[in-house]
Image (cartoon, rainbow, N blue to C red):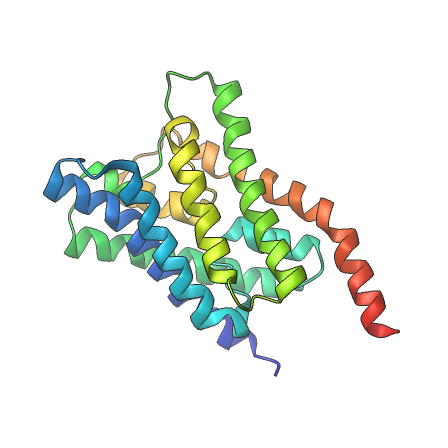
Length: 227
């Protein structure tokens, strides 16, 4: 069944909203209630749950991007058109902004609303490649499950899992955003712009690298399907 761009817009908006509420709201909640005591494991678990909800709820309609960098990856591999990139990106940004507004209104305003921040104990030439790597691994897992399973079965666990693992192991270096919308929304509402450029550039580079590597596989798959 083919879905309209409006339907895609709605589910991407909702999915991104859910992701931002969980991903950033967990950080703010931890800061408000536990003074940061739950730490990175809690911050990793929350988006894992959100992505499972989003992937299993909306995968049939939009392939469950919820991330402008992932959208660009799908465009590079030919899964979506230029006009769909616009629909996806606007929906993702709008959903993220509403998600951050929800967190500000109902959870609290600590921890810069969950805005990403790198660990400046590391040099930028370490931080930036690590953020690229985290984003490339996310895109790679997404493409793998799309290519092999068509977003069925354990796809939500796999996609949510790689985000959680990236956060667990790489957030202490780069912040492990992997998602420009996830970084932009809390940064705008909390006026925390110092490190934003990292998260508006590195995720796109990472997903583009993965898309270029997977593009031939998808082209071959389409060729087989047309034979």
